[in-house]
Amino acid sequence: MQRRTIDDTPILRSSDNVFADLGLPDADKLKIKTALVVEIRKALRTLGLTQQAAAKRMGISQPKVSGMMRGDFSNLSERKLMDCLNRLGYDIEIKLHPTSAVQGHLTLTVA
Image (cartoon, rainbow, N blue to C red):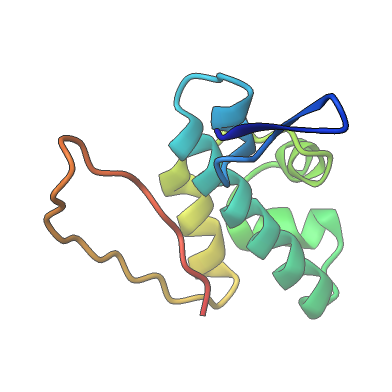
């Protein structure tokens, strides 16, 4: 994060990952999971599904859907979230390419 001062007030520029800015472990994974859940929520709204119907369609329990709607998706893996999106009619494409950095990073692009 970049640090600067405006009128003696310290200002920090975000790294574009709030989880990294907060110093949380696995920040890239948390950002990916959040983006996947945002898409799931959009799909459920578009499809007009109740939590019970969404749970059945996605192959998870209604309490997990409820938790997801409240922002608690710690008990769901990235793979399971992608499976939920598949079951809601989304195609998922994973692209890999070498990086010049010492370590690569995870990103999610929504078409």
